Image (cartoon, rainbow, N blue to C red; front, side, top):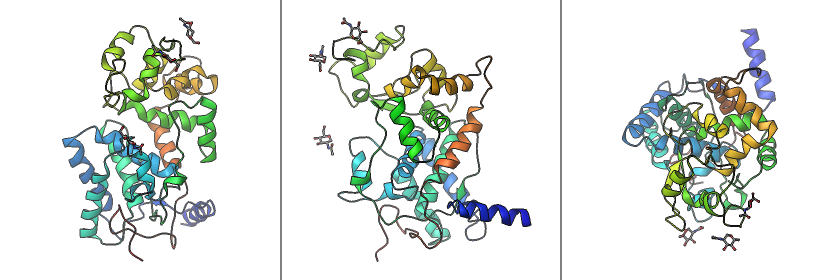
Length: 317
Ligand SMILES: *[C@@H]1O[C@H](CO)[C@@H](O)[C@H](O)[C@H]1NC(C)=O
Ligand SMILES: *[C@@H]1O[C@H](CO)[C@@H](O)[C@H](O)[C@H]1NC(C)=O
Ligand SMILES: *[C@@H]1O[C@H](CO)[C@@H](O)[C@H](O)[C@H]1NC(C)=O
């Protein structure tokens, strides 16, 4: 008991204030309701798993994990994603509605987002983990604050963005491993196939064995909105196949493939792949740890923020 209290105090000092089982008394069915809602949508459309994971990531990277990504409006964070195909918001709102019917005003939208991300990974074949909860929903959502990693970012740039959020190089490689599920658009990728450095040739780091195939999926000057798997050949299963692809030059996003070109990140990819002579890393375990860390970025707790009645709008003041 004393040990537990000491631990709780330490957590508070670090400013997180979230804990596993936050709703066990106030809304014991909260996690079950989120899970069953997520599962019912994913059974219908499995591609929403990657979408829900992405919502959580983008929520946390801008203004903390406080549901700011969910707000509708002319100049909110969400508008940044109008042409960036962020989707799955209806799943979060559906869980919101169901939770409001069971325990109104208790569970935050930010927590629904964090739980839905975990449940999506599990649905896709990844391991489960305990999600600390108790986040409150933020009162600010501004597109002007939205700065996110880009596919053209160097490894140094990516590392810097993660460091600013308290995340290490290891966390970066681990969390990018989320690209083991989901798709991207030809628009973000075609330059690597046809005109990588402006001299009309492809990116030499692409595995020549799959270049014709990739070109047929994304024809030159074709439909830029067409989608392709970020984990070539394994887009719905949560596993280390994505890292194996990086090793073979089969990464799709340039920002992913460069993780293999830089020694500081390559070593983690190799460790996930169990390279002999290096201490092995278990992807599922590391992913769980990194997700918990990420899901505590800038959280609002206790008297801060609010519990939104609708995830897409602030409560009227
Ligand atoms: C989104 O894409 C459409 C069509 O390509 C374009 O007309 C519009 O300006 C874009 N909007 C933003 C916010 O980038
Ligand atoms: C490749 O890019 C360069 C620089 O943007 C451009 O001048 C050239 O026309 C492009 N070539 C092709 C084949 O698209
Ligand atoms: C085009 O640029 C790449 C990268 O700089 C280089 O490796 C390749 O040799 C160049 N190809 C031609 C045809 O100039």
